[in-house]
Length: 275
Image 1 (cartoon, rainbow, N blue to C red):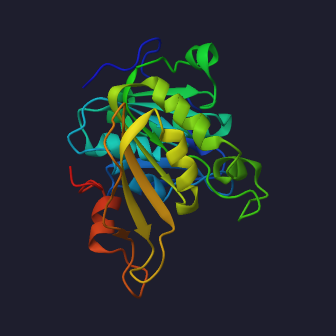
Image 2 (image 1 turned 180 degrees about the horizontal axis):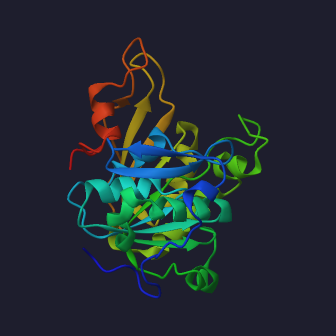
């Protein structure tokens, strides 16, 4: 397992007993490979977006992955569960969600992950010295995964401030997040993000001069419906051209069951790009 990024040791959670936590659920992912402590009635709750994003990391990955906007830790833990040689840096701005990530790591079921994770409370959009001050050093990780807010301000915005912060897109968000990713990822390191298809022009503009060789998988809810998500993977400093991959279809033509491929991805049995 690679060393955790410098300037901080692995997290040693110190939390109140579980019976004193705010209203919450303990949810199993990857068929019980890891669990999340999540707020029951407020804030962001992880779902399939995080699992599909994590699946963009190759199964043989053995470096340090930065989970930018990590929430309670779903995407980062999904990478660690599938890639036993990897370590993770969780970066989250919301103090409330940092508390939930700390509770997640305190769960007995997640004990094996604690020494593989460093948790940072800080804003992904910080630059220069401010970014380094919170522990996001230049060239310090091998891969960055991004699940930024991507709902339009008037599109399904929530009256819950914590949930709105996690979901609502702000101006220049992709440019700011990708700037940070380009700073902290080592040369030839990887990037993966999940977003809505309509954000693709802004994403490609922000990638220019930073990441290249973009690989894009459209995510379709059903075979006959337009994509509602895209998952994009790219390499820092690459000059390779963009590639559009076959779509990931989440459900069949009817019913709510997952397609075989989506089920395998959601449960950590395969990677999105087959590597």
